Amino acid sequence: MEVKIGIQMAARELVVETGASAEEIKQALMAAVAENKLFVVTDSKGGTILVPGDKIAYVELDQAEQRRIGFGS
Image (tube, rainbow, N blue to C red; front, top):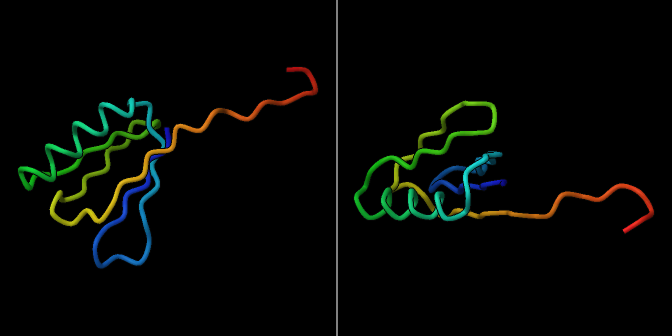
């Protein structure tokens, strides 16, 4: 799943590829924003992204289906 994180006063967004489910991301985001804690996302390579909950402008979740290759369906 691809997660795009917009940060207040930052020109670019963070794009993270993660193995976490949409529900896990939503729960972590709601807790971070409600309690002014860090929003923690682990990427697919094992790295950790930390964003202060009070600085998050938006989060976009993309669960796009993988592209299919070939002529058959």
